Length: 167
Image (cartoon, rainbow, N blue to C red; front, side):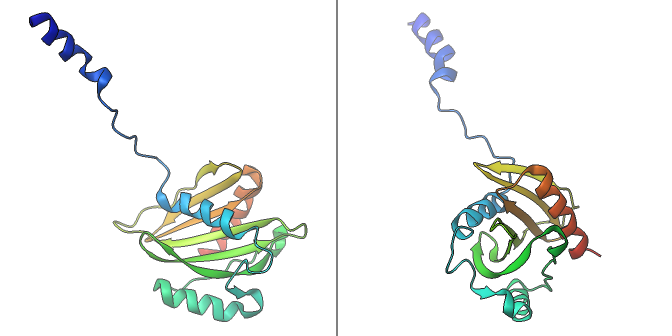
């Protein structure tokens, strides 16, 4: 009986289900990648509000998120605004802006409120399948820039977006 008890006690670690590992990538960055995959291939309805109504789009999304949003200008890097939409996130409404280059390649900017203490800005990178994502938290908002582009290209765009949102 003693040998059985000792063997059972020693084997308990092998037989127990391991506890899940908490992902180091915040939920909003993964949600941004998913939103990019869902909406960027759309040809007829990639956005709710088109670039021709940019002022209305920014006011509407600002009101829904409870902050003054800005839509970055990415023309210097070859990307023009397609438009945007309102999405639902874990912490409430999310602003989702879409940009497109001359070859039809698209980038999306996902902006969501973050709960808890305001944090300092630091760029982070992740990749979900073919979608690269640079994300950062600035104050009480999380930003995630997604696209099927190289890390270097996306970093260049992320730097421009950050500079324009924080002059």
